[in-house]
Image (cartoon, rainbow, N blue to C red):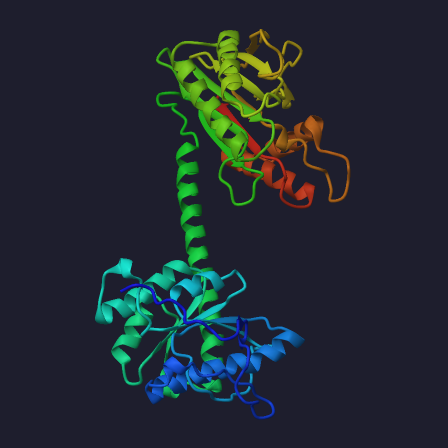
Length: 461
């Protein structure tokens, strides 16, 4: 059935009701005029329409004098007869503004963002495009309005006693239903408040559910991207701690990995992409995966880092992005290692019978992505029989030593801290956990930068 064309008004309609040509209403209330063509309507329909129309008119004057927080859009094609009612008030005691539309075409024009609730007469003909009749047509009208206004509360208006259709309307998506012959100021006011608050609660719950689902999906994705060291067959013990700087994130710009190649060599790395947002985290994952693939392909030292720089240059979102990196390759007997530093802090070594100290830093190269055709020399390091080798990112050493202080822990402070913790008998996971916790406590709260720490240990022989 075609959408009804609005009847020609004698005077323009206004928000809050139509301009008045009827006799003056009683003091304290205003009324809407009846249209001549609507004279032969049922009493229930006339009463309901008149109640809404009279409320709209009563609200018009109040709207001009102060306005209200809530706006009601009434979609009703029989605004016949008149009935005076006091103005509707919202929960804060302010007047509710009311707009009236006789069909869906008018409703679409009046449905602006400041409308909070829609009162829809289910007897209103559905758009002809739906191709339905009878009850399907009435529910089709409701479904059309719900599609037109997915963020608005909707009240369904139907005939008295038609409880089946009313409950079906709620099932389809309306917040509540009203019967025409039971409509009065108290019922309508309460229904509007309830519908608006229920819609807000539904929207909030839906957004919360969607947010939780996105968070779960992100967590699964990030957890899948975290490294699983491949050290089967190695006598070395491995431990790691990772704490991203981003709130509620699992990944940051720091990255690490460790693998054992078929010749028995254990390769480990740790790196830091400047920044700690999602783009930096993604780039860190790409560099880690590239490092693992290149390592298994047999690349090492300068050749490996030069190739990683090419990966960085092609994948980074901005030419200003760079990454620091530390790689070590430990011989199969565990007594020697090759070390390459690309703008990264030098690892800490704790040999049996000696104090923990930093490995040499003098022969390091620049961070990846800073200089084209850079070189990264590989230096040989004697590890000894029993040792602990700790690789870390600068998030561990850049925390402040006390809340509000400008002084940072630094490498010297970290070395002193690790020496003390080793002296207390800590090792492995316990050592890393104690180190990260102490750095956080010294900082006076959570660290703002990403933190990654890797520990490789070998017992004496």
